[in-house]
Length: 152
Length: 152
DNA sequence: TATTTAGTTTAATCGCGATTGAACTAAAAA
DNA sequence: TTTTTAGTTCAATCGCGATTAAACTAAATA
Image (cartoon, rainbow over all chains, first blue to last red; front, side, top):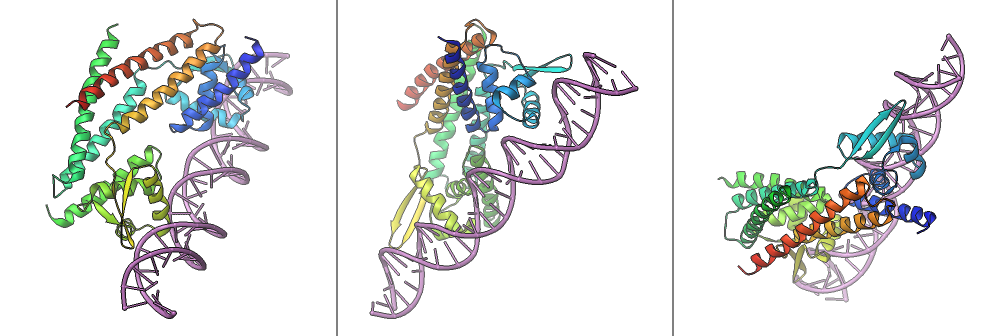
């Protein structure tokens, strides 16, 4: 593969990372920064390299990077007057954690809803109970899987 | 429990449903409509009942309901000149389906990223490979669980 | 047929997050 | 000490989705 090919492939991929992270609630620029830090050959980039490659203002870069660092998605290394950024390799289950938190809040909503129903045998009440059961089953299942992965 | 208590409890719950659905990308009004259809004692409500209880305009209700129906989240029954709406009880795994689609797109992004790396043993490349393995393990696991639930 | 009613359409507005540009700060370099 | 450089702060703007109001349509009712 030519270098130029690889570079333009990287650019496309950065946009896809951006789109993906935007779809799950990140600022567009945040997604593209994560993409750049994931895709580029050198995996530790300076502030300047980031704003030049992504063509974004110093202002946005500064704000967004501070946020990514505070959320532990990106790590920063200071060297002289410069800051270098790299992807923070989080716990593998970080993605699942978020999903499980989602399940918990759904479970809570549905439970409270059933409590407020006059007719606990209503169509929705029964349906919600089924969902709660499935969520519980899922969580048990996941706990088992985590243990299995951890002991590899 | 008093009826008035239950009604105000329902209103609070509707707002929580709204907040939850907004957090996963729905329009605020869409979330509140789903909340209302989940929470209310009568589980099939007319257009008018919806706009009166939620205090929203006919315009928003019309647009948002059309969308919810097209996405199969809400079912509509026509009776004379009126439309009645109720929660569409979807496949129990609809929530998981979406999560698995997310996993698929992450898996694809990471795979493509590794392909473009000059150094397949770089820190990020190794990390991405671990994530891919975990995703694969998760999907196998989920497939098993679905079968188990289906055969109950 | 004339009237009322249920819901749709659409132009206008509102609010808000993302982004930028430019002034500013602090620290290294000269 | 003066100058240069790296990054921060913040006011202003841009763009966009959500929402509404009001005119409009179609169908039921009188």
